[in-house]
Structures are given as structure tokens and as C-alpha cells.
Picture (cartoon, helix red, strand yellow):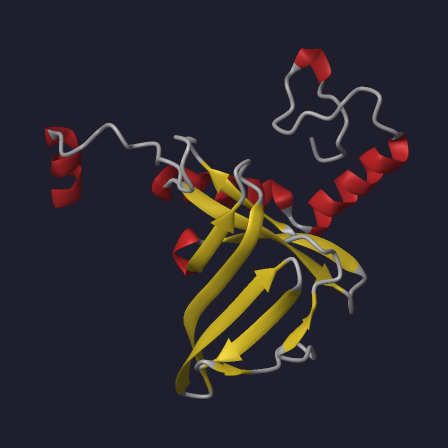
Length: 175
């Protein structure tokens, strides 16, 4: 639900919240969902997971706006990932090419429990008014690696994992 409250007629919430959750915490959750445009973000997270098996959701502090939001990240942008034995993200690296003023370069962001580091073409580089390396104020990685179907490894399985090269899939890809 958009307001983090129970739905009518016993309809189950996609993200269940305990019945004894305080109204203040429910309001904070609802605000986070609104700021994150989670009505759209949740669908994107599921789409990426269903198509590719997994995706990253990172929490972003938007200090200049006074907001905290969730950013759904295409899993192909995750260049490196370290999970603990329970699936918590201990480190992730985003890396992708960007064009800026007609010049192509590689953006890289490394996040762990100690620091956040950003690079441009392999060299430390400042983005968004932050230095190229700054302390992670949380002491943990504010992200979750979502596996569509958890098979026990670091990567999940996509929804179509058992279809293989059946005639129907091949027919669809030819059209």
C-alpha cells in the first residue's frame, strides 16, 4: 500500500509490516516509498529480477533535497559484488560508460562498509559535490541484492530459467 497500512478485505501486502508497527514508523516508510516513486520502482525491480535473475537496490541520501530514496540498478551495471553468508551486501561496484560533452568515459563507484569511492576512467574523481573518496557514514552497505529465485548462490534465477530452447521461445524470437 502507498501509506504502509493494511489493505481492505485481508488483501496481503507485497511488503508486510507488523501490526504493532508505530504510526510514526508507518508514516516514515510511506514517505520513503513516495520519495522513491516505489509504485514504479517495485515493478522495475521485479522486471529486472524476472528477466535476469537479480538486481541491486541501493539507498541514496539526497542531502540537498533532505530525502532518502531507493534506486533500482540494472544488474548489468554491477561489476563486482560481495555478499555475506546470509545474503547481505558487504561490497558492490557499479561500472558503466557515460558520454559527457561528446566524450565517452567509464564511471565507477565502489561502496563498502568503510567508504564510497568514485572514479572516472580509472582515476579518482569527484561527483555530486563529494570528494572521490569519503567515509561511509553508516558502517554498512546501504543496498540489497534481490534474487528473483534464490538458488543458494550469489545470483538468482530468472523467471524463464526452465524454458530452455523450446520451440515456442525460438518462434517468438524469430518474429
